[in-house]
Length: 607
Image (tube, rainbow, N blue to C red):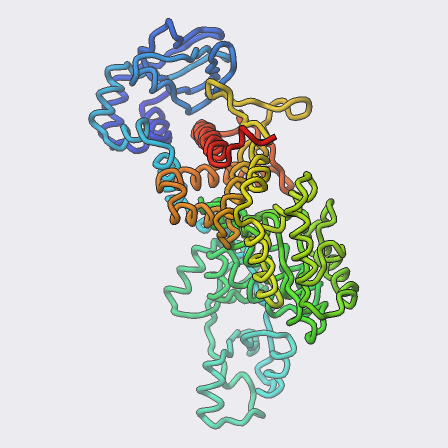
């Protein structure tokens, strides 16, 4: 490997990319390139670490008492902890012939003293490490935009009219094609008519609408090729101070690129999607809009945006869809006499990819409940067409159990709190995450207030509810190795059962105990911190752990060729070393949270 290649490789590996160029060059003079055959033991409890290893090619396994903890591959480094603390419980053994850089212990420790940012990487806590890695992802957030092309964005259909057509006829055709501008063909010379032309050359100049459209056109179009980069389109907008570009393909006009569309694309289409939902008048229109949501998720995730912000945005857009469908199917006179609520991850504002529908209808007392039945059946059918899967447990407004009056829900809540079987406690947990998306929100508020009152002083029921948080083992061994599944998932772990569920459900019950109305898990944690139940540090750790679990799960799903539904299995070997470390730290915090719940609710005494 040449010195140039060696330098480029080091500068591309975190945390070496934190070093100055001069430090890198000094480092290169201190490192050796080494080769180790398969089964070589590099570091072990009785084999002292003498170097930091940076893998060029090959695989190294880290084990504790024969149990696999980590797999290191190309561009990974190990084991800084052995060098810093002088001992280790781990054994590092070559699994596939190894070619690596070897940095002597003395040089590594000196580097820690000379470069504070480099030292911080190895000494920082979970929160700092998580945030630093996020910052590095954000540094590259413009990359998707820089390489995106014009043909990836929405283009308006061009309205091309001959120069001799009257202004009136031209405007009529413009309205018929829903175009924003008119392109004028004057014997092969193309011009454009915008709102500015109409205002200044027709209205203010008192020109007749019977005159030719060509008389008021501006000639000399600013064009861009369909295959060109969006970044170049941005440059043209900036350079010429125009609001639209004419898009061509092999010399032929194929569309109009609006500046607003470009900016909305950079903002992940959310403005256009929201506006399109509001304007939609049919389910078919909504279907075409819904296809854009996955692109939003991919774009935001690729830019390193925290998953909780992505899910919040998606939930807001989904709520608009729910509201639009509600308005389409239900007569206006009935809309103000009921409340459409969503539950589960949708209710918590944490849904990114489509999961089963979890929705319910709360009807004002005195209304004819049966009158709502055919409309709610149609609502569920429409949602299925829009990509919201039918709920396997039938938790939908088409089910009378989840479609009842305020008094009916109060009676049901009383039944839930008086019956401690698994089914009723599950229904209660689902309803705790209810969030109103359409109709009269006060109906849900009345039911929630009644629910909070029913739990006043009921520590016995709260404990039974909280115990479900411990239902699944955290997939982390005594020595911080991953515990994988069995059979079809023998190389994977269930990130939802292993960590997400414990945080979501435990925080949910704590929120119930303290009458916290917000349904979002992160916001609930913040509120629990505000009332002093969590100290600020633990609240931050719990939020970061939750964000880590959701982020890794989402990126794993998006890495698949086809994402059909939410999936919870993750193969740790396919994660980067940084992600594996963050995942382990997140699971450790999950275990700490479980211990807190056990102590807080005295779960050791609950049968």
